[in-house]
Length: 145
Ligand code: HEC
Image 1 (tube, helix red, strand yellow):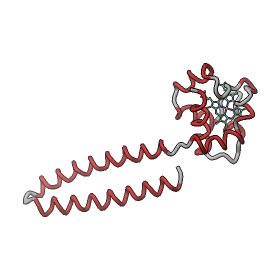
Image 2 (cartoon, helix red, strand yellow; image 1 turned 180 degrees about the vertical axis):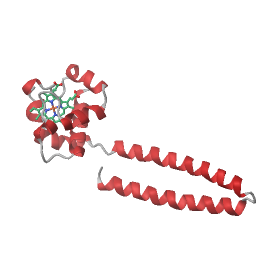
Image 3 (cartoon, helix red, strand yellow; image 1 turned 45 degrees about the vertical axis):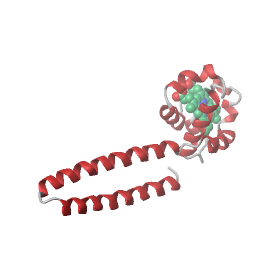
Image 4 (spheres, helix red, strand yellow; image 1 turned 90 degrees about the vertical axis):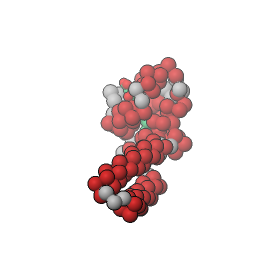
């Protein structure tokens, strides 16, 4: 995950903290029934946490950057996926990619990281991070659908 999205997540965390304290204070001052107040607070907080988790998941997937992936691709994947070397599915070959794309970005990325049959782990790119691989996979998928 990029430092930017870590920053966004820690900002979100601070927002939850402030929001939770605010709700707590409001409920404390506006109810004479502490039992009810706490139950109400719990349900509001779980709704907030749910919303923020959904937001974070959105950030995590928006984190994949096909544009940055093109650079990784050119450096580490093109020699095989640009030529079909070692029977690799060629980038842009829709027929070769359709069934793979259908399995989803997550599985394709995991396989590209750990290697799959004739493809070595990370395509042999020792300096590629998981994020680089995810971006390169996003680029290949974008070019091949
Ligand atoms: C040495 C050649 C080679 C290099 C370099 C290479 N690949 Fe591959 N790749 C293959 C081959 C061969 C397959 C087909 C494996 C199979 O399904 O039998 C493959 C399959 C894949 C798949 C499909 C995985 C699946 O689950 O079906 C993805 C995604 C992929 N490569 C991504 C990449 C990325 C990203 C890079 C660069 C970081 C890369 N590859 C570099 C040879 C290569």
